[in-house]
Structures are given as structure tokens and as C-alpha cells.
Image (cartoon, rainbow, N blue to C red; front, top):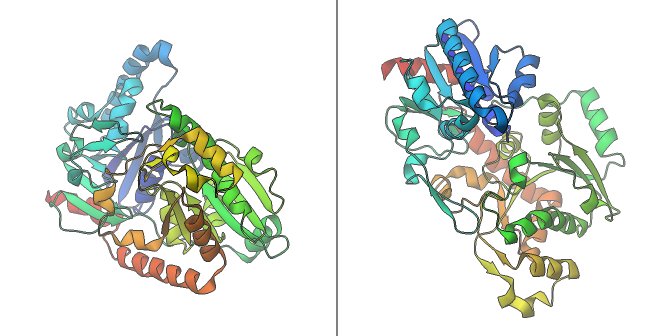
Length: 420
């Protein structure tokens, strides 16, 4: 029986937790014993799924020093009592960031003498460890991935390519289960009451509302992004139902759009989340590395990623703006300058270019510029309503998923670590 400790200390996004949980739930319980060292964000889900876990203390800035001491003692006791064969960080950089309150980091775990690894979400070794943020700020990260005893790259978003023997590849999800007939009828009654509504699924996290570098232009765009999406959807010649899962409601932005029905959930249980997504007509996001985007591809749900691939200075296109609707001109006046991004609002346009280059995953969804109104509307209309285009994209999705499901399983990955 191998024992594995997963470390998931993020508190702004469920994505990091999803990565570890999807990996561990495929480990046979008769061969592997699992424990999570986690933040409060993951506690409820672990309890619901009866997964052994220990929660580190996070009481606030005023008692941060005390928290660190308590958390180090908690970790010491866990390592002594659980005695894991391997420690796997869901994201070694989240572990690093969280050390400001948790008091534990990669060096902490190295002191225990247990092989330490991390999931590598972005093919870090090809990035020079430099992240470019929205507005041009650049940050150089420590090469923690290179220092790990082993690295696990899941697909998607990583691409398959030759790699060092300590790099292990696996698939992200299993094929999703479909709805039962009663579940389907309940979904249709709630979200497609006339049978004609096109259901669009959207999901975001707390960090997607953060202006990390406090740029005025980004503050305005953060306000405008939901409005732009709602304006685009209002121009579709369809009845639209929006299922939105996220910390902030967009009800105000959707209120005046008569043919749009908007349903907001701060949180729904993971089983319903997956089923609602899988039964939707379209998934819409501004985050190309979204774990929900990967889920949509697995579920053969056509998906559109709204990005920006160039610097847009609205003052230099004043004549073109006169041809745009009033709301668009108002947005341009407020935002003034828009910077490239693949991951809104962080940016990461160049940072993610390596992992996306020659990556078959990018053929499984549609990317379009959020500021190019005509192209965005055309993409929305096409992949909501055009049967042939939807089938063609779903075929690409199925071909890709069939390929990556041939990768080693979670158990195969852990077993292979003995040969390092």
C-alpha cells in the first residue's frame, strides 16, 4: 500500500484542487492511501467525498506568525503519523505563494526526506520562468519545477512531446457520465422550458476579479467584460439561457435583455456542475487554461475562448468607433487601452505561448478576440446554431480525447516513480 500526500493550499481558485482530486480519484483504494493537506477552500468537498484530509489554519494577517507556527506543527505531526511515500503539490508555485500564511513550502517538505513532486500545468521549462502580466509587468519565478524530484504533466493543457524521465504524462479527466432521463427532464424544465433556448454555461473564480497590478485601465475592463459578453449575447437571434457559476452575479448586466434568462450560482456541487456543463449548448470563457474548458472538451460541448491578441489603443481608431454601438463606444472611452491576454485578467500572453504552440488541444475550441465585435458575434452564432460546424468541432474534440486517454493512468504514473 503506497501512501500519497497531496498539498492543495490555494484559496482563490478551485482549479488547483480539481487537478489533485481528479488525479487521486483514479487511484485504486486497495493499492493507495490518500491524504490531503489543504486550505479551508477544499474542506467541504473532501468531507463530502470522505477523503482523509488535514486543514491548515488561516485566521488572518493579525495572527499570521502564530498561524505559521501552528501550521508547521500540524504538518510535522501529519508527516510523522501518515508517513507518505510521496508528496505531490497540486501547484508548487501556489505552495510558494501560500507560504506567507501557511508557513510551509517546498523546502519544508524536502526536510522530511520524502520524494517531492508537483503537477506542471504550463510546461514551465519552456517558459524561462517569466510570467508577463496584463499591462506589461513581468515577473521571474524561482525554478521550483526543475527542483522537484518528479513532475506530472496532465493533458490538456500540456502537449505530448519528448521529456526528461522525471516528467510523467497523464490525462486530466475520465469521460463524463451523461444525465439520467429524470435529470435530463429536470434540466430541460429549468433551463429550456420552451425547448428552444440555447443554454450557455460560464464559470469563473475569485481571482478573475483581481487587478493584481492596480492598473486603472484593467479596473475599467474588469467592469466592462461581463457587460460586453451580455451585449454580444443580446444580439443573437436566439432565446438564451445563461448558467453562470461564480462569486459575483452578472444579473445587473443581463437585466435589460428580454430574451436572456440568467441563472447565477455562487457554488453548485461538482456533480451538478459537470452535468449542467455537459448538457449546455456552449461553454464561454475568457480563460484559455480553464479546467472547466477542459471539462467542456471532454463532454463534447462546443466552446469559445474570448481573448485579446494585440495592443488596442482606442484613441487611434476613433473613426472606426463611430460605426460601433453606443455601448461599445462607452467601453472604449472607459478602457482607453487594452493589452493582450490569454488568461483574463492576469494576461500571460507570452508565458502561455510555448505550451499552446503546436498543441492539438487548441483545435478543440474556438478562440476569438473579445474586441472584434463582428468576429465574436459570428463565432457565437455559428457554434450555437450551425449544426455542421458544431459536429465538426465535436469530432475534433472526440479525436483529441480518444488520443490522450491512451496516456498512463494515475496509478501507472505513481508506479513509475519507483524507477527514478
